[in-house]
Amino acid sequence: MAAAVANGCVDTSVVNSRNKEECNGKEKKLLNGKINNHRNGYLNSKNTSNGVNKSRLDEEGPRIIPKMDWSEYDTMRGSFEKCSLLTAVLTNLGLYILMFLGFVNQILFKPNVATEKNREGYAPLYDPFEQFFSRYVYRRVKHCFNRPICSAPGAEVILKERCSDDHNWTFRFTGSKRRCINLGSYNYLGFAEGEGGSTHADVAAATRHFGLAMCSSRAELGDTALHRELEHTTAKFLGVESAIVVGMGFATNTLALPGLLGPGALALSDANNHASLILGLRLARATVRVFRHNDVRHLEQLARAALAEGKWRKIVIVVEGVYSMEGSICPLAALVALKKRLGLQLYLDEAHSIGALGPRGRGVTDYAGVDPNDVDVLMGTFTKSFGAAGGYIAGSARLTAWVRAQGHAHTYAHAMAPAVAQQIVCAMRALDAPAGRARIAALRDNTHYFRNRLREMGVVTFGHHDSPVVPMLVYTFSKMAATVERLTDSGIAAVGVGFPATPLNQARIRFCLCASHSRAQLDACLAGVRRAAAELGLRYSRRA
Amino acid sequence: MEVGKKIQQFISYWYLRYLLVTELYMVEPWEKMIVHTLFAVLFGLFWYFNYSVVTTCISQLRSTTAHDIELIL
Image (cartoon, rainbow over all chains, first blue to last red; front, top):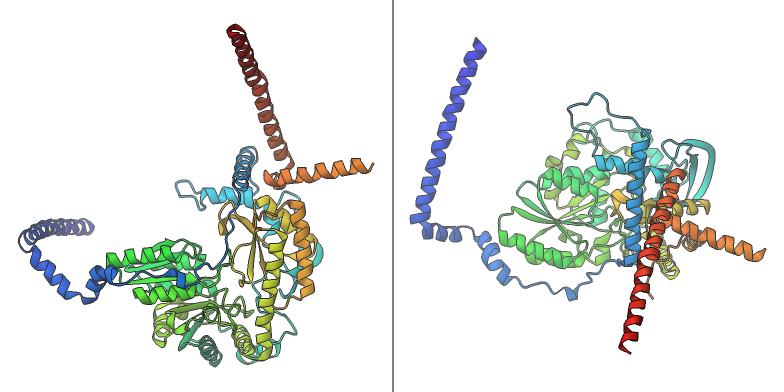
């Protein structure tokens, strides 16, 4: 009874509110109509006198702000040699054959995987195409990915060998190990050294003093003097006012972006931005417009269009320093000039560039000769160059205070382990010593040497001359798998990258160079690559 | 002997390149056979089409033109 009465009440209230809404709607419409009819001019004049900023952006902006003269800037930050039509056609044909065989296989045999049970009436857990792709394309080359290792990934790495009896559905270890030259780790400055490394004693001492893990978030019980020292050191290293560190690199982007941007913000995002940035922008519910990779002219066009719309609370350019799949470098000087001219903001992800670029290892700001204070948000990770884990957001004190309060990482994510924090502090200090500068110089030398030799070999490499990530295009999955197999046989551990990370028909081998590679090791790698290229036909380059 | 080895190497090299370019390098043996057969059938049909239709058409065309020329002359 009570429920019925309550229901009744609810119903009447709903009806009432509906009536009210309808009345309001009508009133509004009427009012709107009246205003539009009688007071149109008055309202317009009020608008223009009211928003000073808005009117400048709306009306005078596009007329007054002159177009950028891009010839002053170096905007070609990486070469992307196009493949011939024949290669493109054959690659696509190969993919169709793989799809066809996958369908045949799926019809004839039950896939050797766990299946969803008792889920009738529910949506499937996995995207059908991705499921198909991972079972019938990815599975066939699975032996080239996620290979287990059993040593520190320094200049050399020990691979644990494994084999499969059922066409890569499952693997078993053979028990043997293989020592390989490591071209697969983002260990640019060679700080991932294992026992006996330059930071070992300090890290051990920090672990004894602070413990293994903080078991709490920074905002609660996880804050130590070491973390504050790390933030201070990071800010000083980058040459900005303040920094905040997070225990996980991916989460730094994903959790800070929702704190910084909101539904009224517009993000102008590079087409090849990392998944963490894309996820962060989606979580922030910001409107995202994508500009072509490293194309400042397209970016300017989009930015001007957005300014003319005049409805965005803020417009942020989101770019990376070094793009890990293309090996290209962002044209930072040009971006900063554009941002200053149009009054935009800049979010720079230096995951791969910090430590690896610039004469002092300060990342792409150092490399491009840009004042780090001109970049609104500097983000980066410690995972790559510093041989540690985690990430940072750096900039003005106001920014970091805001991220501390509004980004979710500081409040909810576990604090960085003291050993990791100490490793970063040691690595940053080392970079200011002569030995650290020697590492940066060695990395640059190795990069130039390796890239030059590869180009002479006639294979297609992407990216900028100075970028320590060197992707070598092989186009098809089979060639990627065959190359990785041949390289492993020659004692080289390199990473093949395929579809989810690259376009479907642009599989590649990604070489990551390291300061601790010796010339002899690089020569051995190049000899291995040369053999593989000759056997498998990887000399795609048509450049003289 | 030397020549035989070279021919074998040549064939195995281009067979590998064929496998790589058609993505057959990484599939299971029976799937390889399916695609080989498919290619063979397609090629056979193509050959038969050329043999039966194209060549007869051309020969007809040639004979008619020859006949016409004869008539004109």
